[in-house]
Image (tube, rainbow, N blue to C red):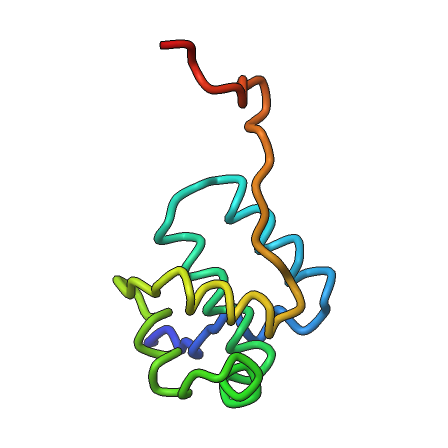
Length: 104
């Protein structure tokens, strides 16, 4: 008997804003750029790529291209999509890190 499977898409499980925020936070904490891009793309798909594209003033096709595996969105695209999703990019010192410039 063959095993039957169904397509699985994480975006289908990210309907709650709290889940989306936690997912993005975990991706940024990990720090892997590919994971961050994938997470932003997953949340954008969960919210509706066309809607996010319109709010970000970017074409839907450009968003799919930027946030596909191996995509490399520009900082401008990342910032506009994060804003469209209701988030902002910010800088904070790393845990246990020293944010002061080195003397030299």
